[in-house]
Amino acid sequence: MERYNIKNVEKKWQDFWSEKKTNVVNVDKKKKKFYCLEMFPYPSGKIHMGHVRNYTIGDVLARYKKLRGFNVLHPMGWDSFGLPAENAARENNLHPKDWTKKNIETMKKQLKLLGLSLDWDREISTCDPEYYKHQQEFFLELFEKDLVYKKDTYVNWDPAEQTVLANEQVINGKGWRSGTVVERKKLSQWFFNIKKFSQSLLDELQNLKNWPEKVKLMQKNWIGKSYGCEINFQIDKKNKFDKIKVFTTRPDTIFGASFIALSVDHPIAKNFEGSKDFLSFKSECSKMGTTEEALANAEKIGFNTDLFAIHPLKNKIKLPVYIANFVLMDYGTGAIFGCPAHDQRDLDFANKYKLKVLPVVKPKNMDATKFVIKNEAFIGDGILFNSDFLNNLTVNKAIEKIIKVITKKKLGKKKITFRLKDWGVSRQRYWGCPIPIVYNGKGQAFPVKKKDLPVLLPKDVNLNVTGNPLDKHPTWKFTKLSSGEKAIRETDTLDTFVDSSWYFLRFCSPKNKKYGY
Image (cartoon, rainbow, N blue to C red; front, side, top):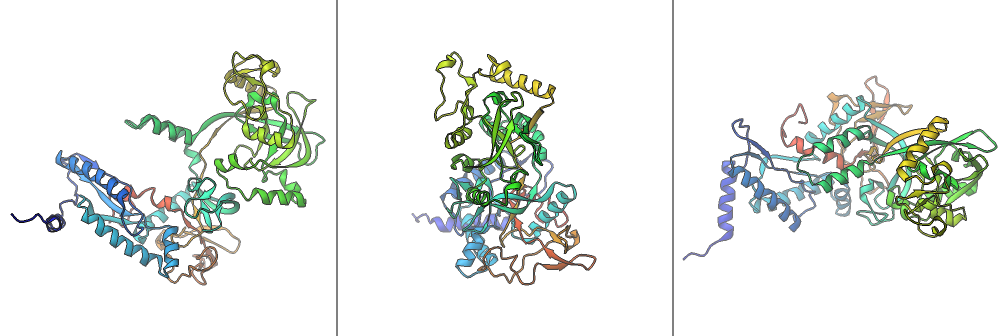
């Protein structure tokens, strides 16, 4: 009996599937549709067992649905822009495009050898101008609708990669690829205004049928809707600022306040930029990232302004005003009141600077005289005490009452906030989708005309320069407006997560030149 030759048999059927276009899907209105979508891979050079596992599971599902009579769309593509390609190209003295193309050829061959039922006629690659042309169109449409904007902000800066990192790319305070400690740096960045849709995103979670509850809960917590309060604290011995507006989600703890903390970017903080001590403090603040994890783990440090704020409900109490490294300007108002007994960051700060710690919430059924706070803040539910008219109320009842009192006395107002932040999409690297914006001599931003898309990357790039290669390019960034006025191109490129946020739509019509989907 002839020995079974695996390679020959597999090749025979793989060639048959390719010639007969067995896995190519066409419109068939008589059949039910099924879209089997897997995460498309980054073309790193070779597939690994994680790829095999993931795509085998998808293949089983796609084949099962096909046998059940469904018209199955099962495509594949490449998430091919990104810093790793740029770094690898530099190390190997290659162009990122050549390095990426070679890796795609290798990985495509390997995936075909697995015999997966993929429709290769729908293959896409995010570094293909035919793909990112439409992405640039999306950007311009968002720009026209004021859903994309540019502002100066603090970012997570990877000094090794010389680029911005998203919060999700910072692991234990370090860059996810370089392993370098991330710094806080102020840069001008482009943002997608996703925060505007916080409530609608939250509302739509209930329409996600058959999704695991834990996944929906994660999304709910990520959006992070919270009810809080803005409260005005008058400044004692008024100067050019007469009050500080703070934001808190725990207004019930106001009688436990012992200090006010401001962001280094708060308007009041700018008054101290002539102080060497303050500038030294500000420099220290820049050595930490902007993630919640970084803020929680960093040593709490502050700069004493020698200002005092008057407690809005107890005029005889004056609270010292600090500028602190754990308060961010883009959260709330950039100012908080510190209640050390019931917030761990506040407690760490108070212990360092020997500030008063006054508990105002105790566990239920505990004697108030025996309740002591030392090194761990009590953040749980409980009963109010040491809190004047809030005494003996639960936390939720106390929050309701204090907001009513503050509103009635015109000391502040109720405020709804979301944890979700606008998406910073600027990256200071070469190998990414160019942002279709140009600037005139006054720095005003103008969208590139859609007829002039795509804005292509220059081929003659020097990847060995320090910083952003596009910004250092001798000619590419110099252009003109339609009026003939000299202009400068935007030299940042889009975060690769933008590329991979819509590829599932492009698979449905990958050859359409007029529309992205």
